[in-house]
Length: 496
Image (cartoon, rainbow, N blue to C red):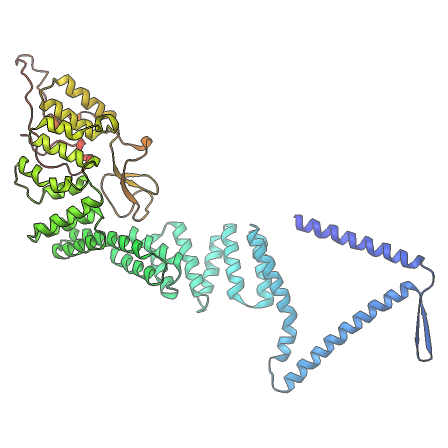
């Protein structure tokens, strides 16, 4: 609209200027005298201007005639396209002008105008690889999905435009939520242009969502081959895919291949906690506890985690609490002041019924970083030292309202997961889960009295008045390490 108004204003200004100039020339005295040989011409100023314009027009026509003559001579000398090029030159100029205006309209958000300019350019240029793309994008902007899809399908007929057509239809299927069709189209697009980074990323995401781990690993290797992914990032994500592949193989019942895939995942990324746990389990099943111990120590050195402690405890399942506490010292000395080290040591001390040592292991965690797990352990310590039920319940009440501590949190959408997964269940992002404390507003509080039986055991039945009140006896907590902080909401597997 603004451009049309500007053109009208410029046209009016030019007409006004021409009118003023003509009036000025009419008012001038004298004129122009032209003498050629014995002929002399006297022209008024207005006649001189008109004569000059006619001379310019004659020169332009003469040049056009000359260029036509040259084209005819070339044609007669065997150049069969000379005449067609001459007559198409003006059409190409108009066509490229319309194409340029269409691209500008598309960039300005004027979809209907862009489609009109694309149609005009197609009439003059007859180059569908240019005009069809403009038409399809303009149709998408205008919301005409049918027109866009028809145009993209036209691009499939030419080798040089096939990739653009496949990619355009793929994006439409993605917008429609048809992931299976979009994945097949992405695979086709990658076969046409393996180096296209955006299509690589889309295909990797779709394969991860479809749990096609072997295909995703191939795409990841393709990204590394063409330089679109750093080697360290590739190594980490390949380990995640190998671990996911191991889980899938295990679900299918092939234990041997699952063990091999889990060990490979740990080799690719030793600090990947789930991979270390799976690989340790594989080594134990193969009768290689020393290898399991070595890799768990390496993973614990990278980041202490309750799953690693549980896997380390499973290496010698029948040992006494004192023996387990002694064996765990090789983990504790790697990160003696780490929060997880203190919590695991406190749990083991409780299992060994050394409650003062468990209190010392907790240290300042109760004051500095009180979460539900630390407060629950403190309740167990109080019960073990013979505190009253009111004191134990007081600690458990604090645990109910305390943060849950570190959990598997998606770094993209901050969704909390009870266990590690390769793809976020909320935003479908790949390899975004981190073991960290979630934002305070998103912490999931523990559920009511479900925590109570975990450590303190069943309290005496208050509804039976005929039974005499007995002094609380310190329970013995099972020596098994809690696999995950979320298990504080579950009843114990065994009460001693």
